[in-house]
Length: 127
Image 1: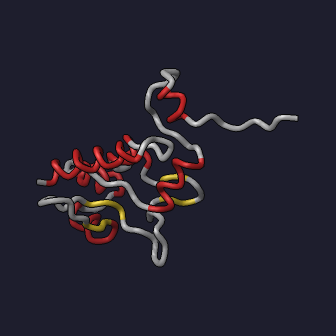
Image 2: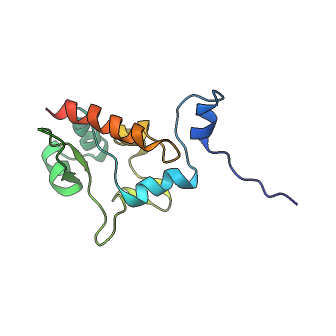
């Protein structure tokens, strides 16, 4: 008897069978458990509105700052004493509709070089 295993959407996209939408394979959800994705500068206001709070309150309560060159991009904070994104709960993203650009563009089942390139693009939006 063969058990059904959900296909990895990142793999299907690489094979040209699907357009990028989102992947829920184990490798992709591991990203949420290990490091929150980075926001583009212009996404901060959208997420704050989605949560019904001010931009300043969102940054103070829910964001951490990173440095890449001269840029200081933001990402969601990590849960206390964990590496997991504060918006990742029960295997789902609480802000999925407005999740960070990096989360929209990078799958854990993709090559590491893509992660680096996406971060460079994000950093430019913060310069």
